[in-house]
Length: 113
Image 1 (cartoon, rainbow, N blue to C red):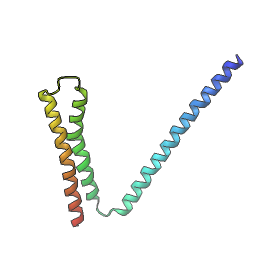
Image 2: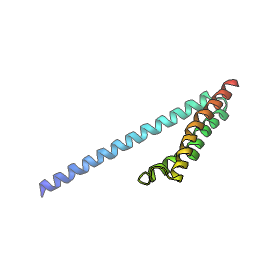
Image 3: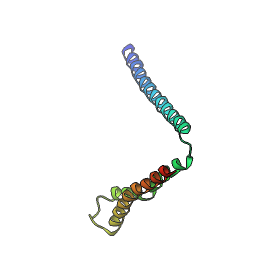
Image 4: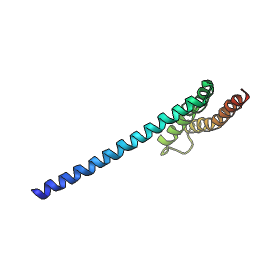
């Protein structure tokens, strides 16, 4: 019985250390995000540039890249070239072309100010 309770205590101790490691990494990541947000807020004078960067990357990713990529990954066992899979590839490739182009125009416009 004492051997069993020792094992239970050691198991509880190891699970607590895992939880401690997770909470430490949580606080580190949270601190990094807060610090980088603060620095960005102090450095940037025009919030429109930040919103344009987020729009150029985030909306392109959500609208073009991810839907095409998810469809291709979900139906990879199907035939190689179905109509819908070709359209998913077209959407994916179009997103991969549009994102750098949008970023170029955002950064070009930001440097003109």
